[in-house]
Image (cartoon, rainbow, N blue to C red; front, side, top):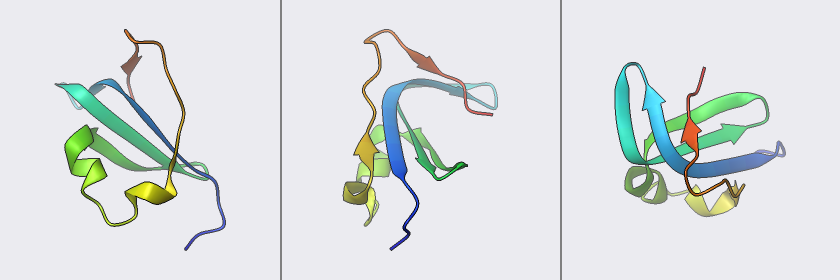
Length: 64
């Protein structure tokens, strides 16, 4: 397992022109390691190693 901080945020996600209502954005260190559907992220084997960073209920994530 990595020693870098692993953070995940859940919110509306806009990426590559697509909108995901229930999105997840996972970051390890300074890199985005996942951007997509929340359920898909939670199904990954290491999802529980990420710490959730809470966001406002109406937040929109635009990774880049």
